[in-house]
Length: 398
Image 1 (tube, rainbow, N blue to C red):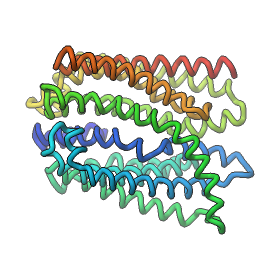
Image 2: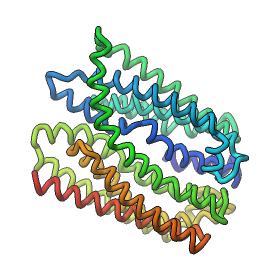
Image 3: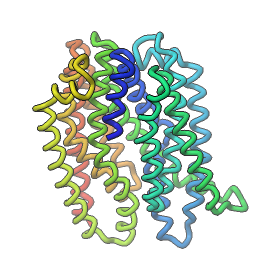
Image 4: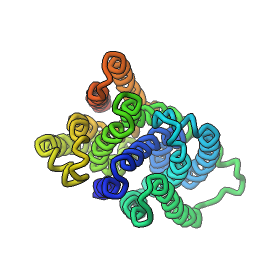
């Protein structure tokens, strides 16, 4: 609900150009984010959940190891982004005049990394009340609340990042109070290494997924559509992401629980849950997509206003990708729980290659952004098929 309200507020407060700056900036942040997270969004909850079933592993050491690694990587990467901010602005927006958006985007990234560190610790511990409280504050309340303070896209991004950082730091120091700190700091290194070995394999996949969800809008900015049309495409992708986020809680709970079921060899029980989740995901998304395709103009007019009806063609095309994307979001946690190797990453990169080849040909043959969007939808369809094939392999061999 917050996701929907945020873009409504952006349309009212920022106007067409400001709305596009805001939407495209958030898509770009999603693209950069995996390079900083290092696959720890999956690695931290997985290994903490495993260690709770072990007598030889300490879950607190995984958290401390992750904190040190993420701090070093984030500070190094954002220093590079700052030094080359003009080039980054041109790469993302197709123009140097948007350089002023790079620093707010950097602050937003710091806030996201801080949030993820605390959230995944709670997730791994299955402390879902605390995890959901942090998620509610940072993902539901903060993005809406910042519109009370300004109607400038750059300031909105900066404020959002600052609030995320403050809320996450409160949780971080709360977690720190209850942690077991090793007397010898070197004891954390094996845990950090374990997280890196598992997580680093998933960086290409995380980056590939972020690229899949972001580059279509960035490519549009470099075509005849410009930043405004790119903003509409980014908005359509955000709607798809919002639809996928309805199923994200399934994966959030399923990752640590599936990890424990796999350790206990409860594969029949896991197969039953997976079947139920898959049927519900496909049914609900099909109903939602059909409704949107029929009433898209009315929905967007009520949501953004009649000056944003230009977003309808892109939103309708992107809506076709909601069903396969929901299948992937619902099932990806099973693959991450079962395999140490990055099977999801392989599937994502194959889908991304299809997308890039299609869009490369489209950019040569036509400047119409619709061809880019069709490639995006086909890539999502391929991703869902590859995910289901891997699921079948898991349960066939177990």
